[in-house]
Image (tube, rainbow, N blue to C red):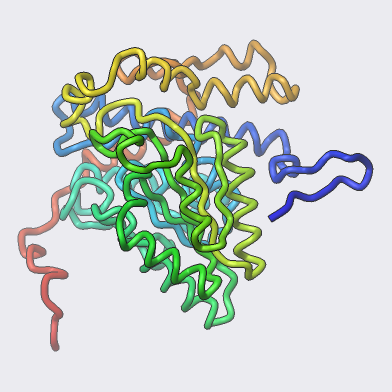
Length: 368
């Protein structure tokens, strides 16, 4: 898995080098969108307008934006509970409001969170246990790594049908200790299936620190036992995530098989909002401050300014970075981001609950 060499120099080109300034700025906007989705839901719950558990993606947005940005609409993804923005970020480059893009709408995702009739899950859950065959999203489950064999089967079938789709599976670093993780990766490696496993290493598997999860420093080394690439990305740098994931995608699409991409990041809050108070006790304050010090939005802004794609004045217009959910306001985000999410929130709030008669739907096979 080598990068390409520029014929006019000795430098090696990276996938990011093919991005236009407009595409890089779109990446920043999508980082804002993922962050605003997260903080808006936290605020809505504090206002008493939302029930259920929230699993924050705050500080991990670069993993989602960077890994999804270069995919084709026809590729598959398998998100987990901390990846809710992935459901509407998929194929977003085809147009945020494009009805033909192969990703969920913001209305569908917000209706899912509010447990309303317009949700893919029809109010059976308020969070990530959803999927869509037509949108090429594998249903999320609470058993992390449990969707990897399903993902392998999906792209195995696609290959048999002559397709060239790849699948991204998202997993926490703790899930790599499960037997099913190793069985699925081994199967994908043996059959050279285009399965890219993203490991979101946010340093904690619920309340277990990484040094009690694995004896090595890098979870990407799990790949060595299967003879497949194991890449490491800076999970706070959306461009580095993009580079590493696109290298794995090109490797897979060429028929060379799976890869593991470990994205090193830090979980801003508790495992879920039910764990926030407890997390403040099992995680030292200085560790949390250090882990959140490199905000993905700030990192991307500095890169855009350094490249000449954004002025310093533009970078200072919306200052959502390095702020908690209780500190930011709508003026810290681009207007189009606030407007887009408002559409989803208002749709969800105004939508009805499903009819009671739906209670038995999907429970038993209906026979005519």
